[in-house]
Length: 112
Image (cartoon, helix red, strand yellow):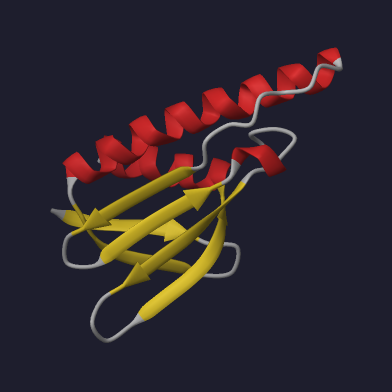
């Protein structure tokens, strides 16, 4: 298990994160991206998109790590933000992060 650094809108947070947890997050983000792309396509064609399910990822290790995103409120994947919570018995951090930045941070973590 190694340190994962997530860049937030203001600042960053680092914590121990397993490769299995990172792979699961990557899969959940892929599903979210597909939902966002479908919403964008419907907006371009003037159709009314079908509401998509929110992404709710949770990981429990040294810390509890949660990522939430409602794809129905963003016009494209590039404007989407995720709500991030990192907590343990002594600390709780809740903040927003750009989805594209989360993807970059995750790719960097998985490639190292």
